[in-house]
Amino acid sequence: MSKTSIKSLLLAGLVGCCATAMTSCNDEWEDEQYEQYVSFRAPLDTEGNSVGVTTIFVPYTRINSDGSARYGAGISSYDLPVIVSGSTHNAKDLEVHIVHDPDTLDALNYARFNTRTELFYHDMNSYASYPPTLAIPKGQDVGLFTIQFDFHNFDLSDKWVLPLTVEEKPEYGYQRNPRKNYAKAMLRVLPYTDFSGNYQANNQKFYVFSINGVELSLAERGEPSALSVVQMYVVDENTVFFYAGNFDETRLDRKSYKIFARFNGETSGTVDLWCDNPEVQFKENRKASFRVTSEPDAVQPYLLRRDVIINNMDYNFTDHTSTNGSKIEYNVAGTLTMERVLNTQMPEEDQVVW
Image 1 (tube, rainbow, N blue to C red):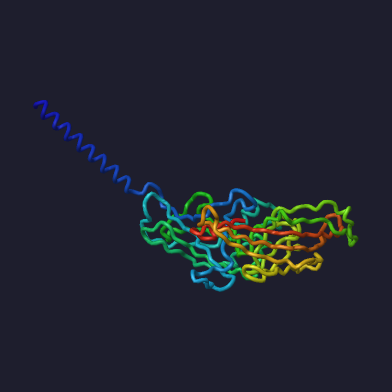
Image 2: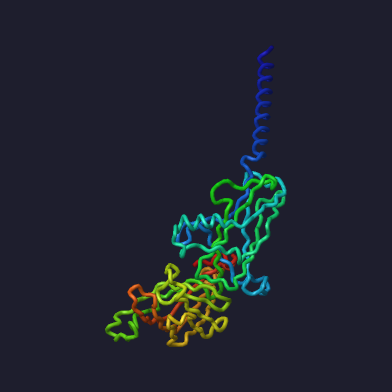
């Protein structure tokens, strides 16, 4: 056989091998490289007071595009993403079963707080409604599991979590993700309104006014202390509550010191303040008022700067649970301001942060 013939045969063989290799590579690329597991998209908080759960913000009332309430006042919803993972698209119609998971919430509470039951997260399943299954059609990799919340009589002086899990049985025809936390969602739900959130309190001062009923002189009061942030929690569309003075949600006796604030108007008006605990001896010294301003950012006009300003807040309250047994009366006075910088090209709830 001539050298030319041998060369031709070798080239032909080489081309054939390359073609086979390329076909093999393409086949492997088209095949699923991993298991197609079902999981939630609910990343856990890694800092702050809510480590180990997923904080979500939802409007107190879910509003349609025309401004009407979708389900009614005080009823909202959240679309929890459910993901089919893998290197290829979902290969079949799935019916994913999602169930309430109180056992995981119990384990989380014990792991984080041990026997400090007053710090436990409360199960909010009774305030939520959702279907038992979610259909994810063939070719789709993400489904949205709609959860509806009824916030009537929802007391945010407690911390609430909705625990859910992907249920797995052989007859369901799917595998839930075996990795820790991927097949479970621990949703800490915080409803919000235009008036709830963190208010800067740098211009609000407080000082001891009296001890056991004996009023202190100006010299005895000394320099007033400054507050930094006052957090206001939703009660209804126009009403919030906050904790008196420098109390916050870390206080075990916080429920005794809830001060309610009702905003009378949409963009300006008066603010009614009251406390439903007579032991606090709450007294309003001046009538508070508020105003709301909204304007586009001067540099980035797609950003909307929305400020809520509360003026003339001035009240007294009594610390009736002092460890030394004394009844200490405080005066709190000043201005509160909350600013939200909202990107008008994004949903508001994706930007609300406390």
